[in-house]
Amino acid sequence: MDLRTLRYFAVTAEELNITHAAERLSISQPPLSNQIKALEEELGVTLFIRGKRRLKLTEAGSLLYRRAVQLLELAERTKEEISSLEGLSGTVSIALVEGRAPFLLARWISGFHAEFPQVKYRLWNGSGDDVLDRLRHGLADLAVVAAPFDSENLESINVGREPWVALFSKDNPLAQEPGDFIDLRKLVGKPLIVPSRASRISAIRSWFAELDAEPDILCEMSNYLDAEALAEQDVGVCIFPQTTYNQSDLVVSKVITNTQRQVEYALVWNKHQHNSELTVEFVNYVQDCLDEEKSKRQKYIVPAHEYLPPEDTKLL
Image (spheres, rainbow, N blue to C red):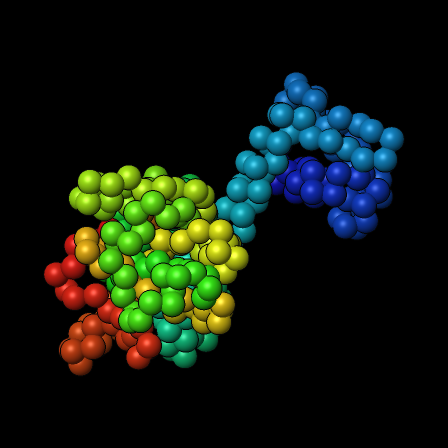
């Protein structure tokens, strides 16, 4: 089972049609069919259920496809890392969560690119758990995540923070109340849309427990923009970290007070794997940026319309 065969299989699994897969691979159909049959014989399993027009992956085929994608990506990254040994070039792969993370990362990449124009970037966005899983499997060099995370196996530097907010439809009565803050007690009994990460749900339940109440969680979501869309339609009240997104005019955001918390973002990497010169240089650059901001007494650059919680605000 070599990389070429895995690539042939992966493309076929994506197209689910031998003719289309062969066209995409720029080979004729018979050799591709023979490669797939030989792979099935080597593994002793059936990878595809053959239909008249389309193929369908078996359970074994689905598992092999997931692994093939990871192996092909690792092979490509390995080639890039070897190439980077000739100088500071190559590709740095960074997985990141939503919220403030993309805006922090954009500043770092802008400055780093000015110093090292030969460096390329591969960014991947997902939920906190998915981002950390990608880092753990070696599919990312670095990650920008919100605490908490596995500090036993990950090195980190803190890079930013933001408060938790409630998002409402502009027609919601709570949105029409004056001010940019809302007491958590006013959310008791309201249908809530919350992040799907288990630690987040546990934290939100603990906030309400301080008020001797139980949150009415209607929906759990990993995607901020999807949650905002539900808030816009007044399906419920979203409890999410504040972000630097330009929110819809149909949505109102208010910082949650009374058991106020803040989210802390960190740049993390695996303690137990070798980091390339490029990865180390990027981390050092980020640390230099943070040190410079701190020396100017401007720890985190925050747009004027956003609220930055006090330093002693509890995490999560």
